[in-house]
Image 1 (cartoon, protein in one colour):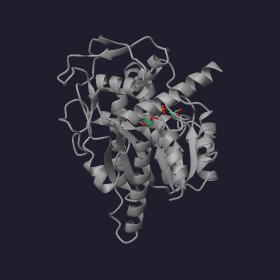
Image 2: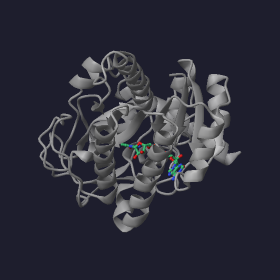
Image 3: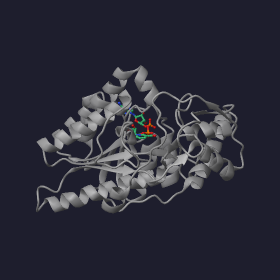
Length: 348
Ligand SMILES: NC(=O)c1ccc[n+]([C@@H]2O[C@H](COP(=O)([O-])OP(=O)(O)OC[C@H]3O[C@@H](n4cnc5c(N)ncnc54)[C@H](O)[C@@H]3O)[C@@H](O)[C@H]2O)c1
C-alpha cells in the first residue's frame, strides 16, 4: 500500500498525518475543499518534509470530483479525515453536518468500490461513547451520541460495518480519537481554528498571546479532584503515528487474506493517552511549559459536557503496536511554538 489518498489532509490532524506518511515513504495525495483549512498548509508541509504533496481542491459532496481523482491516480488506500467537526455548531446546523459527513463518506465509499479500493482508515471520535458508559471507554461498549456531530460518526461507523458485511474485501479501521492537541515540533504546523476556538488548547494559546482576555472554564463543581472536567489529551503527532500503524495492520490483513478470506475486518481502536488531565492541570502545565500566565474565570457547566472520560488503549497498544510517546509538557510547548509563529505571521 504505497499511494494513500488523504481526504481532509489540509486540516489539523490530516496535515500532521501527511507529514508522518511522507516521512514513512508513502506517496500522499490530498483531497480537501479548504472549508476549514488554508492552502498555505501545503507550503508548510513542504518546508517540514521536503516534499510538496499532490493536492486536489475538491468537495466530497461532488462524486464526480472524487472519481476524477481516482481516474488520475492509482490509489491503494484512503485515510478519511474530511468532516465538519464542531459539536456546538452541529446542534444549530444538523442538516449541514449530516449532509457533509454522511453524504461525503457515502460518495467516497461508492467511488472506492467502483475502483476496487477497499482499504479505509476512518476518523471516528470518542464522542461515539455517548454519556452513559463507565470510564475508561473500551471499544466494545455500546455507542450513542449527544449531538448531530457525534451521531454522524455513529452512523458512519454503522454504515462501514454494513459495507464490510456486504463485501468482505472492505478492510477498515475506525480510529476513535480522544482529544488531540499540540503541534509539529518545528512550529511550522498546528491548529489554526477559524473564529473563536471550540477546544481548550487553542483557546489557552490565544489567551497566552493576548488575542483573548481570559479562559472560560465551564464547570468547577464536577466530581473530579479539582472540580473541573477531565479529558484524555493526545499529541497530534502521536495520533498521526496511529494512522501509520492502522495502515500497517490493514496491509498485514490483506496479505493474510490471500490465503484466508476472513481476515479483513472492520475494527475500532481507541487512540488516546489512556489517562486524563483536568482543565486546571492543563492550564498549569501550559504556564509551566511556557512561563506565560493564563488568566481564567470559572463559568457554569456547559450543557452536554460530562465530568470525565479517557480511553482504554489496550487494544491499540496490543493489536496496532501503538502507544503515545509525548506527554502534556510537550503538547503545551509545541502548541506555544506554533502559536508564536502564527502570531508573527499575522503581524508581518
Ligand atoms: N480535532 C478533534 O478534536 C477531533 C476529535 C475526534 C475526531 N476528529 C475527527 O478527525 C477528523 C479531522 O479533524 P480535524 O481536527 O483535523 O478537523 P479539520 O477541520 O482541521 O480538518 C478537516 C478537513 O476536512 C476538510 N473538509 C471538510 N468537509 C469536506 C468536504 N466535504 N470535502 C472536502 N474536504 C472537506 C476541511 O477543509 C479540513 O481541511 C474529522 O473527521 C473529525 O471529526 C477530530
